[in-house]
Image (cartoon, rainbow, N blue to C red; front, side, top):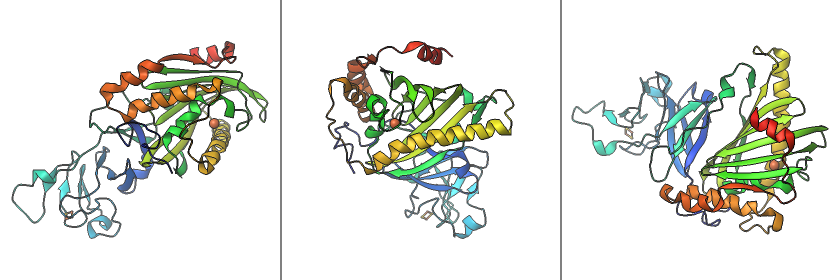
Length: 359
Ligand code: FES
Ligand SMILES: [Fe+2]
């Protein structure tokens, strides 16, 4: 396992950005204990439907607010009151802002020093996302939301949980610049390849013929911040989107989710369209699993021994460093790489790429 310091990412151990922390339906039955960014959190859906994320540990005596399944108030469904939550040990109540607002056996004022941090969370696309920022700032960009998720003509998948991976996320991001694994790993060598950096967004445009499926694959893939990949794909006649979301759990350990959307021929997809979408998702997941297996078994590439045509690896890592340093310094990184960078001799995107971009 390698850490942010091993990769010389910057001042911070964990990056700034929007990150997936749970599937929305994981909060249907009970509050959840989660761990990300080297910290434990209490995550729950209040009675109004609002999702709340607080520091996990009660200020009174350090109890995890959402890790009890046996305390009396938990089994009797008395832990939540509106959007507030009571600690399972002595019942101190925290509102959605993290303020202690009731101590059941004490009439005096609640101690302000007991307030917990409440984090910025958003529910979208069937998932819960949090804004993480070591500087504690409000989001500096909006959560990227794919409009097609709400379009009835697009069949949304369920999230595939790939579990935990002991690899620093910078090596997941290396994939964006990695033109030459597409043949050996995925059987779809690219015929053109381009990266573009635009502040907190990182694009990849590529296309090539897929050996196993005997169809031309064209993709436009982008990271909005370091945790959320979306990819628009045309595969033969099929149109789809793929999501790959990664979130640091601890330094050098990440959690990874995968999802797919497939375009149906009509706005009221039938059983066959849903089955086709499922098949497309399984195919995309199988392709991603080809990367994942390599990642699970590789040793960290602290320095990539890049040939002359692999210069984008270095640019991609510079792009990534902006999120491990103060927001005010982001320009120091992006000004060095912003713009389009073709791979020599892979620079002709062709008509399919232009079509994908336009439509
Ligand atoms: S430890 Fe939470 S109320 Fe006592
Ligand atoms: Fe890959």
